[in-house]
Amino acid sequence: MFKTALPILAVKSSEVAEEFYCGKLGFGVAYAYRPDPKKSDPCWLGVVRDGAHVVLSSFSGDGTPGTRSVQIYVENAGAVQRELRAAGVACGDELMDQDYGNLEFQVRDPDGNQLIFAEEKGA
Image 1 (tube, rainbow, N blue to C red):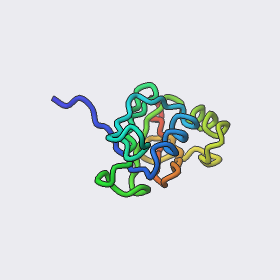
Image 2: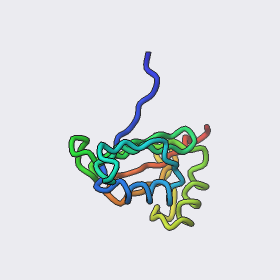
Image 3: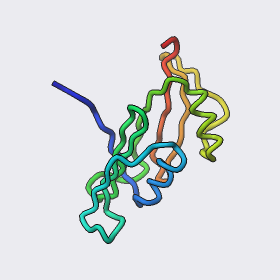
Image 4: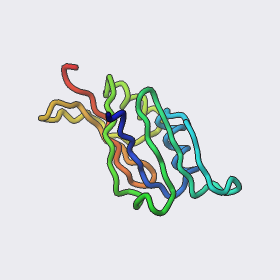
């Protein structure tokens, strides 16, 4: 039986990624695995906010930074967009009203990975 799917986003620096995801997007660190505790990278960094879990990896085998997208469903996309904008995150001026039933806005992390924050219309 399936339990959950966890996106893995490739990053260049776990410290830069942690500052953005935790300092700007409001995630918290759930865990960090560093084979050499004296070095910040490579790192397998799990971050969580409410029910959204993301892994940020600076291990070379986990892909190329800036090539991945993840959609994060939220309860109120407008409120989240205002919160992130107030934190200094570039996230556009308007919500996109998609034909497939979502209100969305997009954010790029420091490595160029795309985060799509989506609210199901009528949900």
